[in-house]
Image 1 (tube, rainbow, N blue to C red):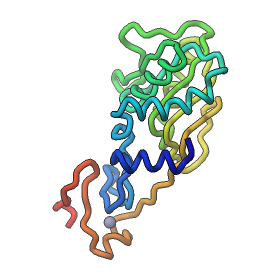
Image 2 (cartoon, rainbow, N blue to C red):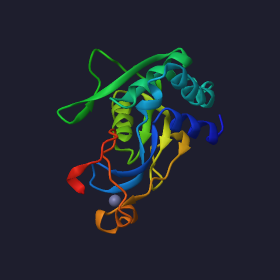
Image 3 (tube, protein in one colour):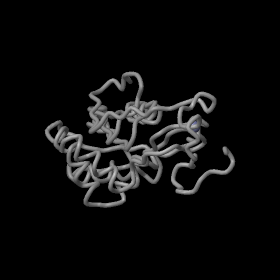
Length: 195
Ligand code: ZN
């Protein structure tokens, strides 16, 4: 899939929105990306994860581990295509853990899957968790890479798309100075609290 086709998919499903957004960080942006909006369509999830499958299909992956919640749909679909087990890690008292009887076997070759990598924090925690359980992290994959600096996962990192998102401090936001109405991500309503 070329980048243009992927972007079209993001836009047509509403995963990628253009406008004037107030992010949870308090920063303003002209773009908002919600990966779940495209992954909710199984056929698109299959298509996007197919790229991850193609990249790693001959890497002898034996297990896919994804950080909850964002990574679950990607991890499950990649595992399905690779015909291997797919599990997810979740936070238990703030620590990333494997619950529900999920296991990493000694020496098992693992692919860590995420929807969007920004700081890489959750993925790094999963990488450490897998290693602590005796697994070998063979690779890391995500649909979108929004990191600003290269992240060292200690393994090959593959993403379908690198996306730079412009963010502004509220007092120096060009959209604010143009009086563009601001919205909270996920809603189409104007956010009155920042007007
Ligand atoms: Zn603004």
